[in-house]
Image (cartoon, rainbow, N blue to C red; front, side):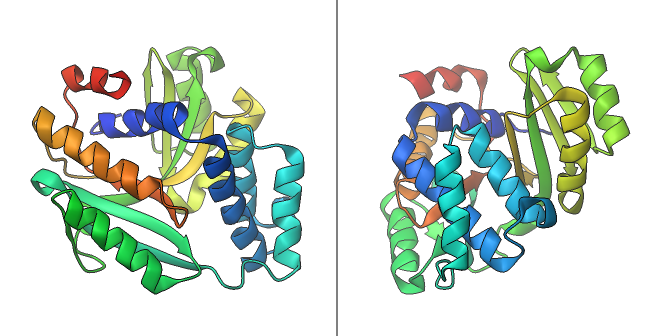
Length: 248
């Protein structure tokens, strides 16, 4: 997959290692509640909800937690949440996009700004860095889903745009509007994916030295530790020798 940054793999691995289950479940449940509130509470009739439920199941969220999250949407929960995207530059000029679901815009803005300031970043206006990214659908399968040719053929037939295969598995990219349809088709051919979600894919990448890389990780950890923050994306190109820092 030409131009696919190692950052996506770092996010995937790091999320599995570091995220507290209760915090992760809470964020996934919030997305389910909001998705159900904005559309039909039946995942089969609501593409966003279907993808939210699919991602929750991939992260081992119990069925009863998912059911309660959908039920809360019908009881009025979710009305207060607002989707906000923050953009800015982290250490060394790395472009950073922060996606939030919040019931208090001022609180979240203050938290995000403080994280950027504390870790050598600068929070900008909406649109200040998103032009360096494309909105894409990302579907991740384990290596056990099949060899590269098998997965590639399935992805092409399903309507995917690109695929990268390696020792850790397969990363399939789709147009953002096609993610749900491609996911359904791949479920039939390859089974359940490890992850299915919308992402920001960098079209230009930045590099950092080891000190800057560690500083950026601290900033991202601080942001992701906040309950209002759903996802953080950076356009960082990470040298192989820095990968070991994740487990240090």
